[in-house]
Image (tube, rainbow, N blue to C red; front, side):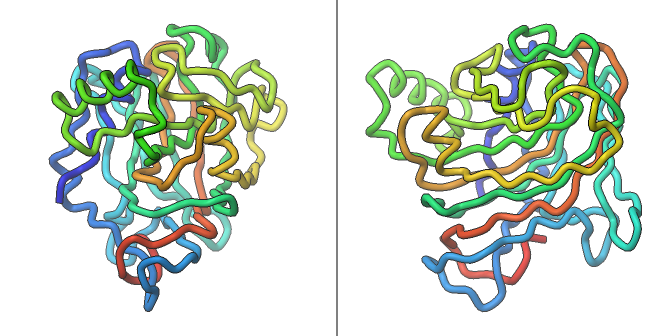
Length: 270
């Protein structure tokens, strides 16, 4: 299995343009879909952080940067009767990535819950040195490449020569911003191939779980002007390497609804 070279996009949105993500470990992240489901059938897909045989589901793999030595710490903690993912960043950056191969349409929804200890004082969605977030969900999409203009097709061809055929060329970040108003949709400070959507903002709800449901099709179309055909990956990331600050975030209950399977498999993505 060839792993998603998401590093090219992620490295552009971090200051370290030339860094590469270690994707050798991604060979272990075999995507497991839904029990008894058939390819082409629309259904729901749960992406649990807790694995049956270990502290973290093997479907989630580390996403680290070569020249960022300090990595965000991820681990499971108990909240009530369920485990949740805790991320602790201290002038650090890294994430967890889950490979996917599913189709989306007008009814496809991503749901999740998260909370943060606070926001970043120097965080700013419009500035490269403020491109850190206490919590973000990073979604990479597949789409009809014939919709790209000539210049964009050249960029995609060049990226594939460097990173491989599976390079993602369009992505959305759902973020908890420091000050930008909820509903803000802007290009990433490093690349317009990544669009930022503010779903929470400010410290007013810090320490409280926030639940979100986003229509992936509608968000992608609003961001890029044409329709997506599928998803290639979802990542969670808490990063403070640009701002040099400390923050903690918690993630839980990631679920895709009304997606189309492209492979047969089990009930949950493990």
